Image 1 (tube, rainbow, N blue to C red):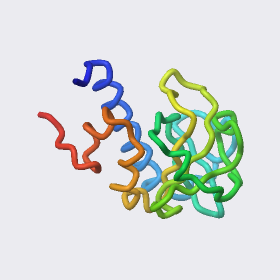
Image 2: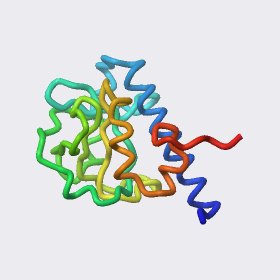
Image 3: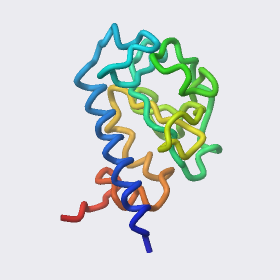
Image 4: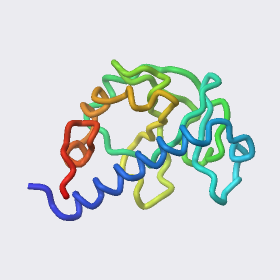
Length: 151
């Protein structure tokens, strides 16, 4: 049974994921936001191999270590303190322009896992493969994982 707290965390996580995806798609080439400490209304961003990614909170991911392979260094980011290492990993069966994983440093209370997901321009194509690595309480509230949102 899913507790009320897990449901709330799941909904907040899903909302953040959707917001990151929307911001990456809408803002495209946000030059001044890539300056470290840009702050204000800038989304958290990282460039890897010339592709712009939105950066998520540190996620609790299930059995992902075996699915990761080294990909490329983070070339530029406006949140360098959010990463334990400036490197990324490709996730098995997921296009690297859709999503990558990067070692996280805990910065926010919402940071609950060892990896930040980086969502690229093809982020929606990461699903449903990405669902395999989400904990059950996040799969339940994530529409891309086949969950039906409650009304």
